[in-house]
Image 1 (cartoon, rainbow, N blue to C red):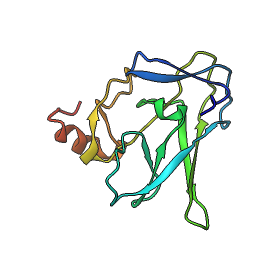
Image 2: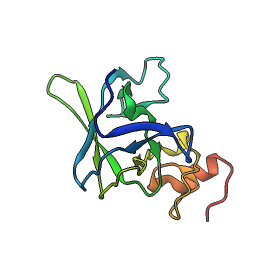
Image 3: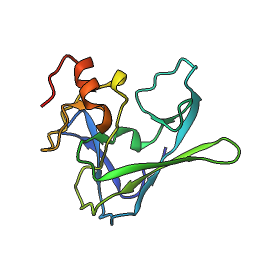
Amino acid sequence: MPPIPGLQVVRSTIDGYGVVASRPFAAGEVIAEVDGVPWHAEESVDDRYSLKITDDLLFDMVDQTRWINHSCDPNAEIDSEVDDRGRPSARIVAIRPIGIGEEILYDYAFPAYLAEPCCCGSPQCRGAIVDEDEVSEGLKKLGLKSA
C-alpha cells in the first residue's frame, strides 16, 4: 500500500504507533481518504481497526489511517457515508489547524459496552474511550469512578 501523502506512521507517546502530519493541514481539510474493506456486524471479523459506518456496516481500515490514535480532545474527525450501491467510504478531516509533526487524533467515541481505559493525556480526558454521552456507563463498565 503506498504511503498517504502528508502522513507518517511513528511510535506514539499515547499508544503504540500513531500518525503525524508531515505537512500542515487547515481546519476542514481532508487529511486522508480511508482505504478499507467493508464487513457486516454479524460476520466474525477482528474489528480492532474498523470504523462503524452504520449499526450493521463497518469498514476495516487497511492503510496508514488505522494507526491514528484516539483523543478526548481530537484535532480530526471521521466523515463517512454509504453510497447508493451500499458501499461505504470514509475520510479523516481536520477540525482545527494541524502543524507538521503533530499527531493526528480523532475521538473513537465507542459505545459504553465497548469502552476501554483512555491514556490520551489530554486535560479533557474522560478516563475511558467512550462516547461523550455514555461516559458514566463506560466508566462503570470499566470499574472506574466518574470525576
